[in-house]
Length: 234
Image (cartoon, rainbow, N blue to C red; front, side, top):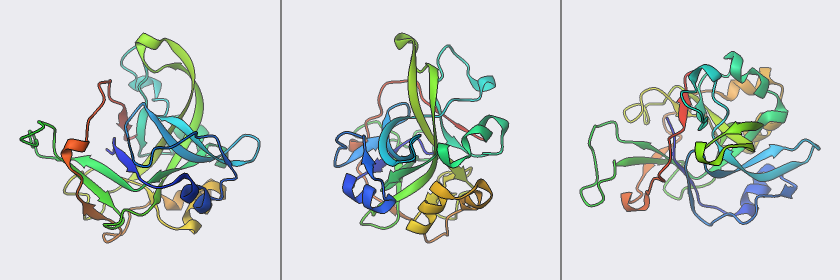
């Protein structure tokens, strides 16, 4: 379950790739680790028809039967978009692109921690050592509810992204799933514009050579103190 990714690129590069004509994301940091229930950049089809770059909170509304407390911290990864809870979000009006340059999966070995920091070792994946831009196939929605108990109810814009069966590179690290990655302008355009009958074909395992393992010092990974969002097999 991918619950950490990095985006190291410019807003202009994201806009040029996706043909986003409007940018309401504010200033994006040159390099940013993105965590659940915190803001991340997405490109979406806005209600007025404009394609825009925006900042939303990572974590879609969780299926009600899986919410275990007074707060819904969000579902970050969506494995089965045909599950009834996700069906309202499959149209182009609720699809989005999540810009990424690398993503992380924790070591599957218990207590595999960096001796200096005490942090669980993490494996990072990118298209190549230069960490070029690509996208996760995402979904977004407006939502009213409680994200953190201490904050009470509020109005939010949320996103998450699809996962699929892992390829041979990722399976030894995370045997259940990998994010759905989009590597070409044709793929990102299909995701934002095509009917679901066509777009759903993009939910497939990336080729075994599509990604490489890249180094990122564990000292840079500082997980925020918050309740974790959850992935979904639904």
